[in-house]
Amino acid sequence: MKKIALIIGGLFALLASCGIGAAMGGSGDATTNVASSEPVATETVTATPDTRPQATATATVTRTVTETKRVPGPTVRVTVTADKPKPKPRPEPAAVAGDPTAAQENAIGSAQDYLENQAFSRKGLIEQLMFEDYSRADATYAVDHVTVNYRKQAAKSAKDYLEEQHFSHGGLVQQLMFEGYTRAQAEYGTRHAGL
Image (cartoon, rainbow, N blue to C red; front, top):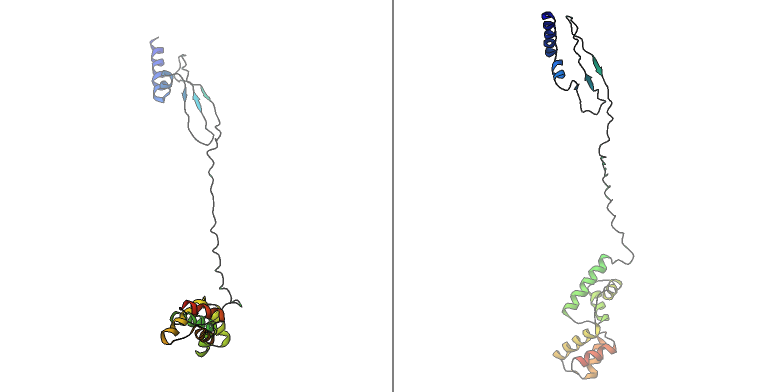
C-alpha cells in the first residue's frame, strides 16, 4: 500500500512538472485562443490520471479545431483627382476691319488736345488736323470718333470773338458759319454769347 501511494505521489509530481497538474487543479480544461484573421486552432487538453499501479502516467488529449472567418472591415474609398490640364492661352485677336489704325488713333488724340484748348466746328477741326499733315480720311475718322457738342463749341467761339471785336447779331452768326458751324449752331452760339 505504501508503494502505491508513492507511485501516485510520483505521478502527481510528474504531472505538475509538465503543467498538466495546474489544468487538473482548475476546471480540468485548458483552452488557448489566438486572435487572428487566419483560421485559429483551439486545442482542448483533458488530463485523466491513471490510478493503476504503474510506473508511467497516461493522459487523454482531445483536440478541437475551430475556423474563424474574417469579418470584413470598414470600406475605405480613395478618390483620385487628376490635375486638369491648363487651358492654352488665347491668341490675341486679330485686328478687325473697324479697329483704328495707328494714324487714326493719333489723329483722335490730337483732336482731343485741340478741343481742350480751343473751340472748333466739325469742319474747322478736320481742317486743323489736315494742317497737321493727317490725311483727310484719318482727320475725318478722328473727328467722328470724339464726343463733341458743336452747339457749345459755337457758344465758346462766339464769346472768344466778342472779347476781341464788336459784332452785330447777324455779323457774328455769319462769322461762325464761316468757321464751319451750321446756321443752327451759329444762332445758338450767338444767343448764348449775349447777342
